[in-house]
Image (cartoon, helix red, strand yellow):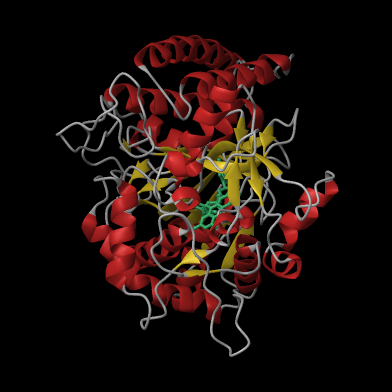
Length: 533
Ligand SMILES: Cc1cc2nc3c(=O)[nH]c(=O)nc-3n(C[C@H](O)[C@H](O)[C@H](O)COP(=O)(O)OP(=O)(O)OC[C@H]3O[C@@H](n4cnc5c(N)ncnc54)[C@H](O)[C@@H]3O)c2cc1C
């Protein structure tokens, strides 16, 4: 068993920013960062486009960024939170620059600013087309210099510990549920251990792996959301899954797909169908730079109409040097599969990309469970509403990591009671004999979610998805009760829970809004509401 002052689950931009702030301001405190994979294997590492921030007040303004965010959010953003994130953003971005993150500059030393779908101004700071990699690198370097941060890798958080584990009945109506730390599966010795903490921050990232094709890496299995739901905490707006319109289409590739950033369309890339027609003007006046949901639905519709599995992104008219300078990674990746983007169009298709909903958190990152904070992609703060504006998520993560730090440090002097937490019970369980029971269920889950709960939904599809998830849930619970836990089984269990929450949210929302499009209810309801589960 370990004890720590501040426990951080997740080593992406949200978790590491919080850990660094705590460590720098409270050198006498111990901060423990836990991740289930290697240090940098996170959604953050794969972010390409950049971080949206207003730092050119001659051509841009907070008001414009706020309006762009509200328009994308389609009536569901919390305006106060949007103002907080946009206005506090520049200071937070300057901090990560001070910690070593480098963003591209013009020859005169001013920052290069990109533009993506839904933005009215050029305001996306970036590092070539590997912005997330650069931010993650800088954060890991900075964390490495803090002696009071313990970084535990390959350690899978199974559940958060609450009064439930002390034998008390906890329900959704319990108002004083408290988090004492977590149970972890130490992947080095396969033992379940306890880490107790005064404050716990969940920064567990997204859930794209619930779908067959996603831009998210294998770690993105929605563990934090599932843990909070099991602990009877509040989860919100799970139906709003953003599909990135342009993941590279490679026949036969499952799981993580390579992303072709929206910045390529920002620089002039044109979507064309199999007949070479530039089709976006049929769907939206903003053409290729319409918000992502509109572009993804337009591509879905063109694919269904023409019976193809992808459309094309045409960059043949680009200046080769400029393309390679801005998008070296994309250029290299395409070339590696035989596509010279100066001569051939890039085959692209939509893929699950970002979860707008998640663990309900207030404007200080506080969840409905005491001493438990959430920030980054796993949280639902009210910034994104029904649809995330491109490149607002890295910004949200740094602003809320700071707010979680402020709020939790203000409570540091409160008396902490550390209860006697029992050890994990694993009696009567055996090693799983057949991995196929887990891998096949995962395939089924991803198939059901992609086919019935994807870009376009309707009631019949949602009902079917719900019935199939019930069966998968029942079978997986039997396995969970009778075998010893493995990361694969834990992730499957979490992903089924997340799938269930997405289907539930989608079924309750009897309208089409933002990323949720139901052909049975094509219009918007008058009642503007968040769906809390
Ligand atoms: C391909 C791609 C491109 C993107 N481009 C952009 C962009 O240009 N701009 C932008 O703003 N956003 C972008 N995004 C979104 C953005 O990258 C993410 O929303 C953001 O990085 C999430 O950061 P995070 O810290 O919340 O989570 P992550 O960076 O995903 O980190 C999650 C961490 O939690 C850990 N974890 C999860 N579960 C457990 C568990 N059970 N036990 C222990 N550890 C666990 C993981 O191992 C990982 O360390 C992109 C995302 C992708 C996938």
